[in-house]
Length: 299
Image (tube, rainbow, N blue to C red; front, side):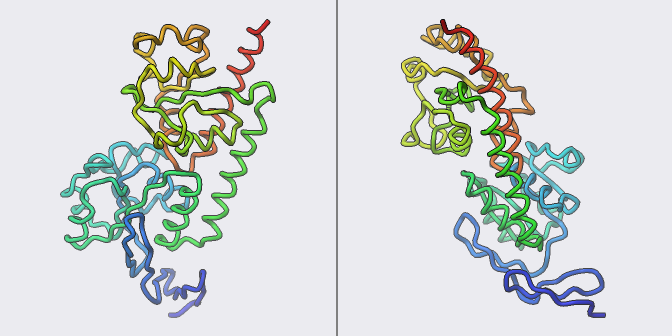
């Protein structure tokens, strides 16, 4: 029994017996620059990148996930899902056995061609900036038959919350020069990374220029020479930071102007996805607390 016909951005959907089917295939270009044809709204989704897992759930489609990568851990309900390898090295057999009608994965991951050869529909997306988060959310919404108005609503709430986090920072805490470490090699987040974008929106200055790449491997001496006002680092990365050559001369370490993030907080900070607003709040709190401490320390 035909119940209704509706249209979303020029795409006609026929809703039959409570289920929607595409009147014609939806063709979406992914980040491999491959046109992916989706013939019906997917009901069984495997997500192999935490930010994509979180995007599916933010769009209200968590119940359609049948498997995730080993690092996906939010929201809590995904903890019960089967693990299908790492984001870069998914377990092909596990993914195929789950019989997904859509596989979401990073462009940098291995296995996309193999999945396609085995008849699976693959959408490879890898957000790298704030604009990418919005773009990827819209693509995933289209793939999952979620109205774009809902995707845009989620984005607008996120973006407004980032602005609110920026406005919460006192004037005296603005302008701090920040080193944000993402791994102990060390790799840092530069101005051109999505983390760097958030710092800029919060009124902070990044000591790593975008010309180095988004997440460059850096010479530890570079940080010593730059003498950041503030260091942001995960709990695990902080363990041996003070033992690096010359780092005992970092005033930020000596004056304890370091924000050390717990594992769950670090997950939020390093994922370009729906929890971007929470990431901004964590950084804003750090800038506010350590900025105030620096003000008190000055004569």
